[in-house]
Length: 219
Image 1: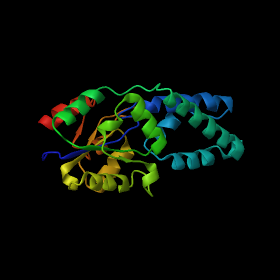
Image 2 (image 1 turned 180 degrees about the horizontal axis):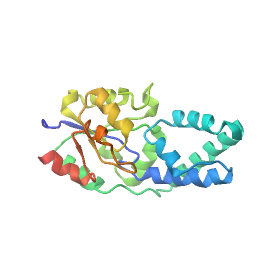
Image 3 (image 1 turned 180 degrees about the vertical axis):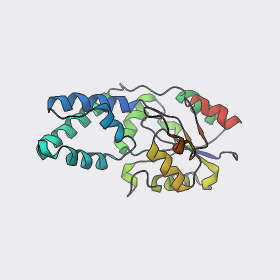
Image 4 (image 1 turned 60 degrees about the vertical axis):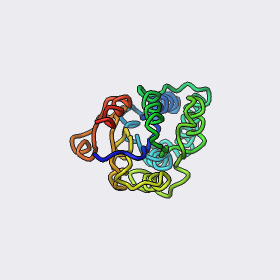
């Protein structure tokens, strides 16, 4: 591919191992309220906005009562975010190495996440990498969540480059589809769910870790 002039990073599942924390919190609180929530159910919602997940949960568990479902949502969300605030979130392998490489090569980067901005800021600050991103585009900045391409269209504009000159780094299906819709090349670094053959065809590469992105950029 052509020389990359700007990188767009996803966050959950790509930079941080947040998905496991969200999932664990959901499982703990679901048991408290006797909701049939499983890891497979959680995996169905990876890469989807909070609002869409909450709406789906209310539909799925309508028989348990609206109040019970809302308590499940509020308590599980709060449990996960309490852990974020104390810095109990691991960075994914290769984050520091890739960011150092991009600094060395003077390649600008922005963060484009379906999470809300306060959570993004907390995680970046605790990890000491907030200054590595020139801008943040969050769920608060878009009308439509991934797989809609809006967030990546905004990200490319913020970088001030042509779409084909950018590169999106993503871990989820909806992120891949959003990048494709925006016309920006995308590399997938899978987190919990491996890509299907159909999804692989939509990527420039599927790589094991962010560290492997360095070799991809050097090729």
